[in-house]
Image 1 (spheres, one colour):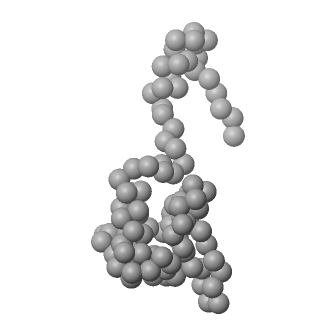
Image 2: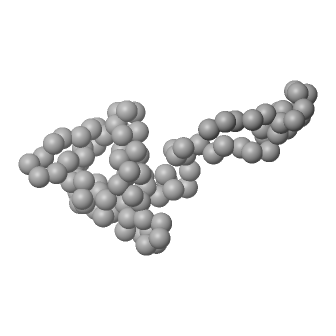
Length: 104
């Protein structure tokens, strides 16, 4: 793949050209969707009265109040969970049949 520059070599034109085509982040971490994810995960712990939940239970709570077309994919859930793990809010334990998520 070849990336070509604009016809002119004027720096002002180059900057305007690049700014006219902004590149979105790969996956925004802190947005309304992230808040919906956190609400669902919080409810999983709150409504089960436990400090740990199975991955499948967490996924069920996370997607509970989300339209079918906007359900969280496994990749999104894993991305957000690993972000929380890196910030030391949760940790994982390998259960006998599936992953268990613990609140720190």
